[in-house]
Image (cartoon, rainbow, N blue to C red; front, side, top):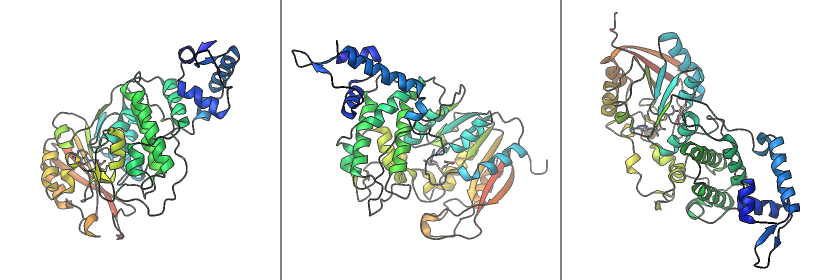
Length: 402
Ligand SMILES: C[S@@+](CC[C@H](N)C(=O)[O-])C[C@H]1O[C@@H](n2cnc3c(N)ncnc32)[C@H](O)[C@@H]1O
């Protein structure tokens, strides 16, 4: 006969998992001793061993839904559909590029494409939620995959609790049940004290991606749908594990970062209009940081978000862009842009013009522009025809007629 704490130690499972199994009827209820403590008989232990063995044999992929990939999320301005174009331009027009810095990383899909082609990457974003997923996808720290997978199974099994998310975002961005689940999962992640930073990031990333899937929104958190129709229960998936040894991840203002790093090529994809990412993704930012700030307004945004507000969404964007370009230490600079400029509604208007980009880049070297057709991205209802997605390639130090 073993007490619960002995069972936890013997099988490296938590009390919660045991009780979940009992509630679901997969193992029998333990007996009680004279002090009313649960005691686990030989029979109970055999049942536990059977489940653990089955879990081993069944392949954990069956226990946890399909693995999670970096691109399995919605994100404003994601370059997922542009990856071939970017890769083509870079591979055909550059030489000796081994290290690439993606300093407005967003989802990280551009950096990931280069990583898959064997490059070392430096990935950065001003949002902590994005940084957390960079640690997952690009981190060098080894992780105990089995331990993380077991934790994801446990998190998926948790019963919801009322907490910060339920109070502020329940019945708004998420169904009450899903909000309670997010509360339970996020609190539980805090309890895993023997997880390294990357292992914890795996769990938080998995939660952030599950939230994106279950959110009652069109993909960002400026507003939620009036009718709550996102009732599917939230499910966490195990992120695929990338084994890297020489990447770097940062959570900094890009203008400060470029003063500190060196790469063969720096890729630049800043916000180009007045929409702030700290505002559009405030719910994810909140859950990633878990500082539980006071929120305000209909959209329930954190009261103090200003430290993450970007110069690139303001009037001083051209100045910030020029400062950035002049401080880059690399052989090549590649800038993503689209020809929305002054078309469309005011919120979609670009804060930096095509001419301003070229002027800044030409101070550093020879500039070539590449273009491709792309679906319009607007923040409102306006649809722009003949929308083009552009890439500016600057060969640093090269002269125009050289
Ligand atoms: C257009 S999105 C990048 C999309 C990304 N290329 C992708 O494919 O997912 C711009 C990103 O820049 C980040 N950002 C805005 N201002 C920043 C700054 N000053 N420094 C670093 N990142 C910033 C935003 O949080 C956002 O994720």
